[in-house]
Image (cartoon, rainbow, N blue to C red):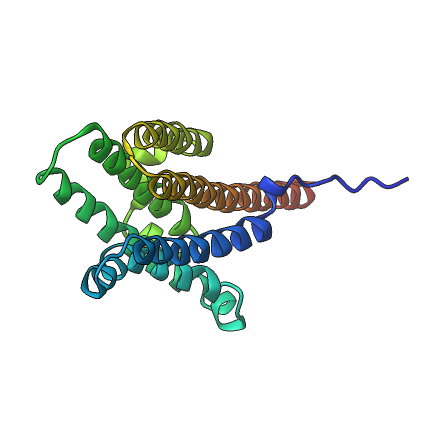
Length: 217
C-alpha cells in the first residue's frame, strides 16, 4: 500500500520557485513588447526598464541563484539580499504616496510593507541576525503565518480589482493580472519556508523531549 501523501502544487516550493522565475521573465518580456507596440521612444523604453523591470530583475536574480550550488550554500545571505531589496521597495513605495495619494498607491504601500515584514520575520529567522537584532521581540512577529499570507491575498486581489477598473488598455490589464499572481506566488514561497522552519523547530523540540525522557528513565 502506498502511503505517500500527494503534495499539491501550491505546497511544492520547487514548483512555486519555478513559477516565479517564469512569471517574472514573462512580465519583463511582455512589458517591453507592449512598450514597443505602443510606439514609445527608445528613451521611454529604457526608462521603463530602469524604473520598473529592474525590481523584477533583482528578484529574478535571487530565485535563479537558488537553483545553483552556490545559491544553496549561501541561502541565508541571499535571503538577506531579498529582505534588503524589499526594504528599498517599501521605502520607495511610501515616498511615492506623497507624490500622488490614491487608493491604488495606499494598497500598493500596504502590500509592500506587509511583504517586507513577512520576509524579515521569516527569511531572517534561520540566521544569526534574528537573535542578535532581537527581531523575535518585534510586535509583528506575533501574527501567524496564515495571517500574513491571507493579508497579502486579500490586498493583492483588491488592488487587482481596482487596477482592472481603472486601466484603459488590454496591455495594462494583463500586466496587472500577472503582477498580482507574482505577489501571491512570492507570498506563498515565504509561507512555505516559514512552515518548514516551524516544522524544524517542532522536530527539535520533540527530539529534545524524548532525549530528556530517556535520561530520566
